[in-house]
Every structure is written in structure tokens, then in C-alpha cells.
Length: 332
Image (cartoon, rainbow, N blue to C red; front, side):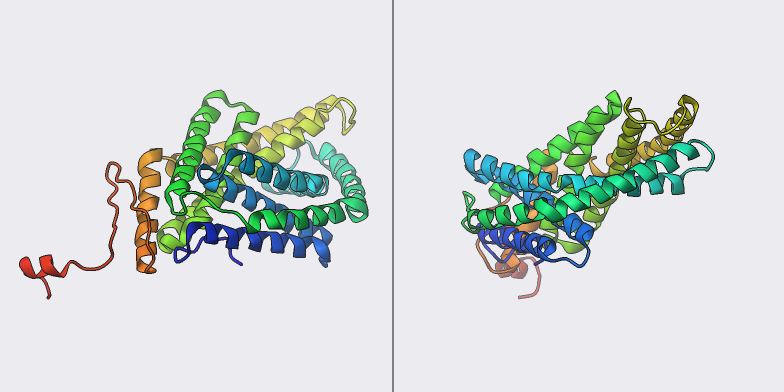
């Protein structure tokens, strides 16, 4: 099941179809994967996609239901975090070494690699013993809740509102992140960008060529911010008092190497963010609503008309106006 909403279906049915597909994929990934790490990575992506779907649909859901489902999905993902994080930091260290000039901090890199390798083994052992089976049980309990998911009204209106609110949050966090330069604020922006990426995935069927390109742009920005976050975590690990990855001079060299890479990543992220979030929230959401309206009409199903905002024109009926075509010299 692809992570895309079908314009030919009522919104609630389309949401349920995607959600159940993600639950099935997560279950398969954790049940008996040939590679346990890949299975965990795949399942965690499913949980992130589920939470993004809930955020998009939130205006059409009762607050207690949204809070319950969101918390339960987050709890399952958190149970798998240790195994994923150990692999992520190990991969980030290798990427840092690959993408920077050798010399600075080489000693700490080797020491950290050895420590992370052991941590990864311990996390994998714990996963085999408990975390995966607990997650599978929680997935089975969650399925009936998503199988009965309904939004009100059952049209694109709550989705449009959810998209506008989520886009607004990402846009504001982008501005704040580069004013403050606080790593935590940048991390919050990263999470909002990830949600926006997944929202574009969900909505791509309403205009594949247009939103497919935007999906890829959001994915690229999310990856850049993910690399930034991983390096920030490596810097935190290197300066943890209980750790001993090298002399103060060696650690200083490692941190300098990290900062050089961070500067490159943040310059790239700023350019990407300026492109992706240039449009104001209301016109952006109205434009996507208009795309969806047109796609749904083309699929021969009734839809709620899009709210017209600024330069957005909602196309409420895809059928040609034969009367006016004749009147003004068009084909009859």
C-alpha cells in the first residue's frame, strides 16, 4: 500500500486505507525480517508516517482521539529508538569522516567508532529479547482504532486546515531557527519539515508532477537537517564528561571538524528552506485544496469546494461549459 491518499475515495476511507497499510508494513518489518536493523528502520518510518497522517487529519478528529492515537504510535516508536539511534550515530560518524578533510579529530573518530559499535551490539541484543515483541503486541491493539477512523466533515476541508496549520508551523520555525541558531529549535524545524514532506507524499495524487517535485524538495531538506542533527549529537557525545574519546586537544579538533560540516549543511538548509516555504500558509493550503478539488471531480465524486484565497482559483466542476463555448465562438 503506497503512502498516498486516493482522490477517488471519501477522505475518511482514504485515510483509513493508508493508515492500515502502514500498520501492516510495520508489522511485517518487525515480525521476521532477514535484517533486524532494516526491519526496525522500516517500522520507525511507518510510525512517523502514521503520526504525520494524524497531524494532517487533526482538525477533523476529536481532540481526545487524536491525542490517544498520536501518543500510542509515539510510544511504539520510542521502544525501538535505542536500536535505531545506535545505528544512526555510527552511520553519522562514518559520513562525517567521508565528507570532511582528514586530520582534525581522527583519534576521537576511531575511539567513538569502537564505542558505538559496542553500543549497537547491546541495543540489537535488547531488541531481540523484548522490544520487537512488545511493539508487535501494541500494533495489534492499535489496528482496530485506525480501522474505525472517521474525520468530520468527511471531505477535504479538515485536511486543508491541517495542512495550513502544519505548513505555518514549519514556516515560522524556519524563521526562528536561523535567527536564534539554537540546535534544539533547528531540530524542531527538522521535525516540521519531515511532516511537510510526508504531507506532500500523501497529497501527491492530486497533481503528481507538481507535488512530486515538492515532495523531493522537502525530502532533500529533511535529509540535510537530519545530517545536521546527527552531527550535533556526535558533538554532545564527544563532550560528555563520563566519556574519554581523546585528549582535550583531540576533542577540540573533532569539534572543529564537526562545526565546519555544520556550517556547510546549514547554508544548504537555509537556501532550501527559503525556496520551500516562500509562499504564505493560506494561499498555499488553498492552492492544494484547489488541486484536490479538481482531481476529485475528475474521479467523478462530490467534493467540498475549495476556499478561494488571493490568487487561488478553485475549479469546482471539470465539465466544459457548452453554453458559453457556443456563445463566445467555442466548439459546441
